[in-house]
Image 1 (cartoon, rainbow, N blue to C red):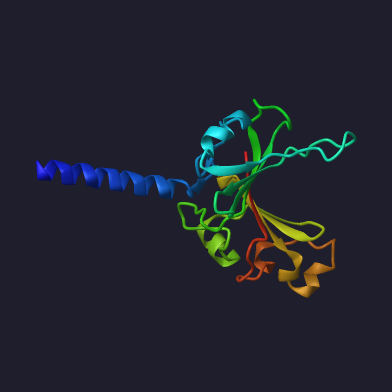
Image 2: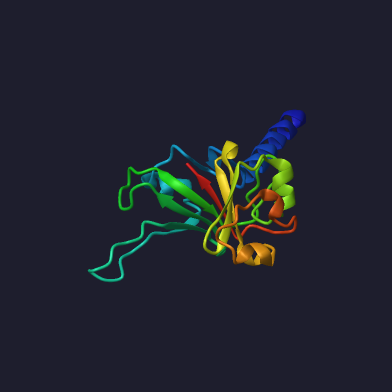
Length: 182
């Protein structure tokens, strides 16, 4: 009988450990408990233990932005979600901005990873120079991240005609923003 109790307790402990890890796993089809198939109307049940901040219009002449923020009860900003259609509960999520360094891909990449680590783990499909950032895409994983131009060599920062290559990004540059695009 003691062996059965120990076995049941072990299974419960392992299952609870697995679920906490799952909360911060990130892949091309899932970020934590959120999948690309979930609708805005399901967020309350998905994040029942967290805080959801929904957009509100500031005046009768403004419309709400549609951006939804997810916070842990303790205050940590986990995710920022952008639905395909604002104000539509049946809309799916188009973009997920990862805001917390605990989210991790199967290859160990987090919000705090360096460009060198990301480049070693995944094939970079494109690098585009934007107004203030370099946008680096990893299409096979449906995510991209931005690196602030202040992290780029000075010769690149002020030349909008330059074609940016991944080899021009310093190894120690870290993402300013990380997005999963569905």
